[in-house]
Image (cartoon, rainbow, N blue to C red; front, top):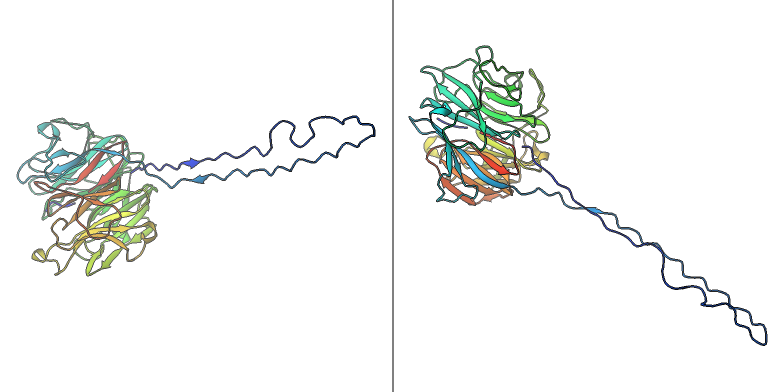
Amino acid sequence: MKRFALTLLLVVALTACGGGSGSTGGGGGGILPGGPTATPGPTASPTPTASPTATPTATPTPTPSPTAVPSVTINAILVAVNPSGAAPSVVAYPGAFTAGSTPMYSIAGSNTGFTSATTIRAMAIGSDGNLYVLDAVYNGSTYSSEVRVWPATTRGNVAPTAIIPTTNAAINPATSYSSSTGPANAIGLDGSNNLYVGLLANPQVIVFASGASGSGATPVRSISTTDNGAGAVSHYLFVNPNGSLIFVAGPSGAGNTVGQAFPTGANGAPTPTATFQPYYSSGGATLDMSGISCGAAVDASGTFYIGIQGFPPSVGAPAGASAGILEVPPAMQSGRQQVSNAIVDTALTNMQTPCVMQVVNGSVYATDFNTHKLLQYPANGTGIIAPTASLQLSSYGPAVLLTTPYTPTSAI
């Protein structure tokens, strides 16, 4: 089965207000216009009346404007296409897609290095403007994996500018799998474009330095997840703008998937800075991260959007199972807490295994592993709501947004 995690800009505007000068103006106000006038008898000059004391006008304290997130232009949505028995490709759809949208261009052909044995597992775009594509390659009895790199605006039958092997005999050997998952399953990048790769066969996150390439590329460090209770199967990872690495893993279908946070510079087997397992329950609809989750993104406020699987009963889920997207604010990103908001599909017509990719311009974007749909929903929406836009794809694949101004993203 083919299944599959920004640096965001915050602008605070200060409105400055001017005040009065605190003094009065005018011609001779407060004193008589002339000197004493001579009369037959000395007449005392009137005692000058003091001008009213001017009360200074306080300058108003500037009030900060609400935090604003500038909108971006979505130039394209890059979607991986994994056809059965044929080489995969990366296809670009319009940012403002509709049910009738068709591809604008693609990255495809023999020069890409993709073959019929290749499956695209994850994609990410770094702050360097490059597209990173993680693939799994079936070698006859085992699967290996590697990351191919192109400029994000690449079109056509173009060779990658770099290839980073993530299958390494010392740290991540090629392994036999019952399905085409391959030995690596997730990628993400930090603000310095260090590449994080989530492994399956040897559960951990390995880190490659920015610019790594070629057969000699080796990880500069690794973060063990096995000893931290996360289990053996990585579902996704992404780098939070606050500098933490968010890694979600757990034995597939075992009911104990958890999220963990680590410092991006972690090495070895560190203790997570937070462990979280949120859930949502309202109106008979339940979404629970303790099941299987697939893909996540973070918005400018630090809220996580996590896709939750809800297969229909025909493939083993309990009756009434829902799929959807949990919205987990920062205050609930630890422990087992019930969140207030989630986007839910109880009919399982659009979402069954939604793989969230990014939150932009007040919308959350996802592709679905089972329905093969590209979906857009209003961010901060809750309950059973219809997608803002939906496009039927020919197969499942991870996706990323190509934006202006550039917005780094990672997704699986």
